[in-house]
Length: 260
Image 1: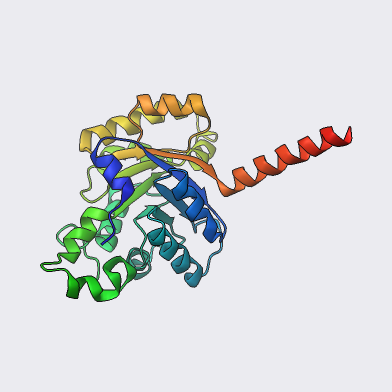
Image 2: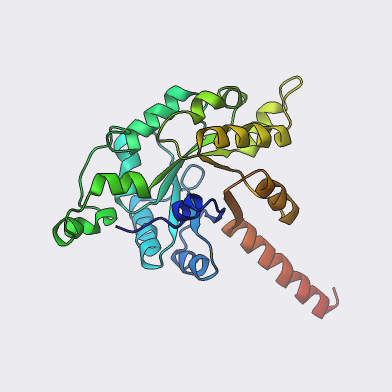
């Protein structure tokens, strides 16, 4: 079974490098792996992918030895763990605002004794059943629990208020601050926390329960601040951003050449 690069970093108390993919670009996985990223955040919440496209990208991730963390558009139990069967290293679930939802997610994507995930053993994660036959004493369910991760997104004021109980749910591996949704909701409240204060609140909860945390990274200075607070999920770069930056730069260069 493939071992997660992200979890290997976390086990050594090191931050993991993430980049985002929001379109079907198989070559992106090769490029990200070559340039040293640990994990690709594949966004199905806001972007349209069909199942075969997702399977193709997950297969590419195994070929090039880079993690993929899927952010799904569903909470359907069998659909969630099928992404893991198809080779995803982790899942990130949006809008987790209480411990009950966090526990339901653990039940969906972790095998017993942590959760209640259904077993198949014939997916890419298990070498299409070959691992069972070729590896002596192959402990599939425990390996899956050890080598896949569950990230819950903290995106509402209620989630921040409930962070202690959310973080305490066994089987939750990491907390991720959704600064866009959380910031939007704080704009409509009186005397809300600042996002800088939320960083501190989430980092303390993660440290207390021995799990990990992260958030989107805006720039180099922002990365340094997050690192100082113990952040270990660093999404820095994505296909939208890279395409826009590249086109902007090249168009500017041509404009200068043309004297525009």
